[in-house]
Image 1: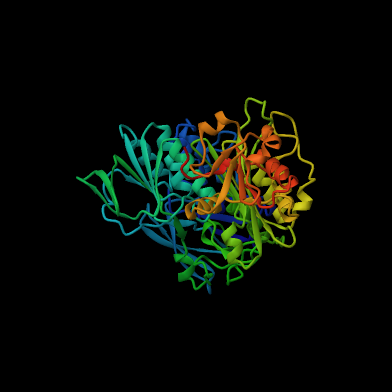
Image 2 (image 1 turned 45 degrees about the vertical axis):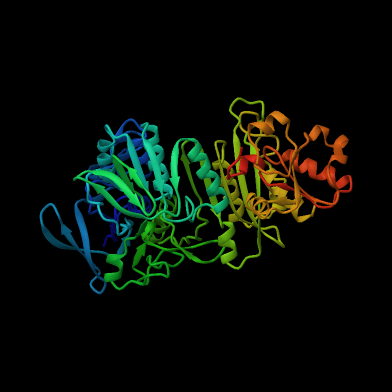
Length: 558
């Protein structure tokens, strides 16, 4: 008899399972059950449609060769039956049947399976805020959300985005591109909580503010006000006028069906699966946004609802359904996005996450151009590495900037996956030509800085540490080694500042007190490091430099 495969969920993970299983098992009976009306759509493309970058809404539902991915497509090209507007309401594990409700016909029926796949995804979190039912309050999770928001954007001049995670930032980007006044409101003390460390998040928040987006942190939304239609968002400290509100307060795993079926849930609240993505019932697989994963560095259970993870898991489940035993090794949490011209990426563990995992970790931050300085497309990249103190093993990386961040994050994700150390990356053979890179890639610069710090050659302070020293009014010299015009353009506000350009430093050493601590800074850290070596070579003993220079300074400056 034909192998009966029933897949619950038809957005991303489910169709991937069906496609892989069909290629490996031409005779299987494969059915996708989807409670919504559309399947296999590019949910990650919705913000780009709203921003006007994707002109044709239909492209989000089509293949690369222009055919709409609907029920007819899956049957004609894949011989996969798709039941839309059909909800799985119960699983009878003993009888190996799924109870379904056809919403269009208003009737229930059962479907037998040999193997069941749960790809039920996630569901948006709704905070206990009054007024969320007003017209003009939107989400951005499904295609119908994007259509409603696109209509609501017409004529709107001010918008408030509640939540500064990935969806919130992408929504803010889309609204700013439509020339609206946008305010991001986040209840936590940083944007992109869980994705970026606090230092890079603070820097990104400043960049967003410089690009015209108001950012309110540690701010609780109390209510949304209006007269049938939204007019304002009231927080604990202010009232924000709003023609439009986007609710982007995160998601949780959709585990109702799994829980009712008696399947084990994990410590994160998502469905527990083994390395083959089997649930506690070996005939039921689960994947995508409804499952928890193992972090490959910390070994801890994590919940990371990312389309990239779901797609990779789809192939694994498809293999296992066809009898090819394939493991899913876990995740690194690699995630990237672009917001208002700034590229953002992370992989592995952040500094705080490494500490929570009990790892002896250190961090290093650099600022560097992504291409040769003379190339017209060159732009800044701020790159942060988290490494194991004694071994030099790479634990994580984060990057932000208008320059090419993502390809560096991808290289570093690969390195982490294979257990690379800084000494391995220092001489890795990466491509160079002026339109693409510098002779030494930013990764080379970053790992060489780590190695110099480990060897005691480079001595650094973070932006936070320097700010704390200034707040305490520590007795030290803040030495700016840029030119005087560069200093005047933007500099750290401090009474203890001395400006000596790097090219003049050797002949002006006597202007600096040898008994005092000296912290050097420049534009991005390169000249500061040179200055530190010059000063130490001349006998100065307490010298360090600001990591990333002014490029990575997230605080107020003059």
